Image 1 (cartoon, protein in one colour):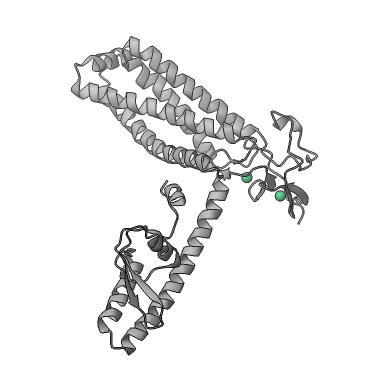
Image 2: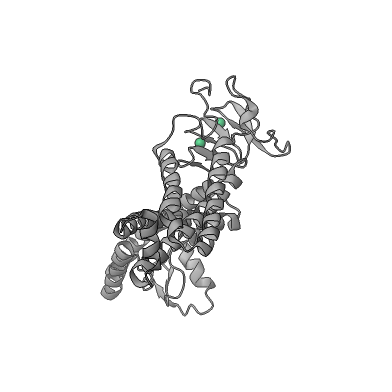
Length: 343
Ligand SMILES: [Zn+2]
Ligand SMILES: [Zn+2]
């Protein structure tokens, strides 16, 4: 298949636009308008100027970094320019390390960098591929990751400033000395307190929802950077770990069935009942601490535990079963990835 069959998306500003992208174009300007007409005028002058300046700076930086993240073409620099694509979509000349190992992309039909990936949405290989962002409607890679990250930081700070001020104003209207209420009446030339509170409450609701999403995304990317991983590498590693865990659980289920059969043959009713009960607990509730059977990973961790205190029980095949004291990790995933997984 040739990339000429389907055109390559140049950047996030090229159509077709996604619903998520258009929603940000509507929601972010609305946030700014709401701050200018409902929040800033209700603050005392001494607080209004610095708060509005701070909010404005982060609103502008969000827009600028978001625009740059969309405008920059993150394609692999080894890809030839298409006839209808000019190099003006890049802010800097495409460069790459000639020593970097390459691999063949059969869709682009060109040798690309080892860390490049072909994006099915953009139909091109992206240098140091991180992920395809539906909000920016473009791939995030080496060329625009820093703009993407700064855009996220700016939006998060902007949302925090707006949420804190709105919450303080709403509380002051109902619990304060009445100064905010007077400023609201003066600004709107009417008793518009309830309307102002309703508008601020609606925006606060969406604001906190957005903050929760973007806060999680930001923390996720901070942890990825600390671990030296891209989003794509994290997803690949996470999938591998899930598959490995599923494989070990399948093996454990087979081993449990054999052990129960042996226990029944030897008349060890209590052991077979216990194994059956622990198998159900493990599958239904994820409880593994009292299970005498362990996956390979759990077995290794139990051996390495300094005070495992395990009791050896024979399963009848000469294979030692470790009864755990329950203080080791029981999910078969290393701590580093588990930390990232909790994001
Ligand atoms: Zn490709
Ligand atoms: Zn893409």
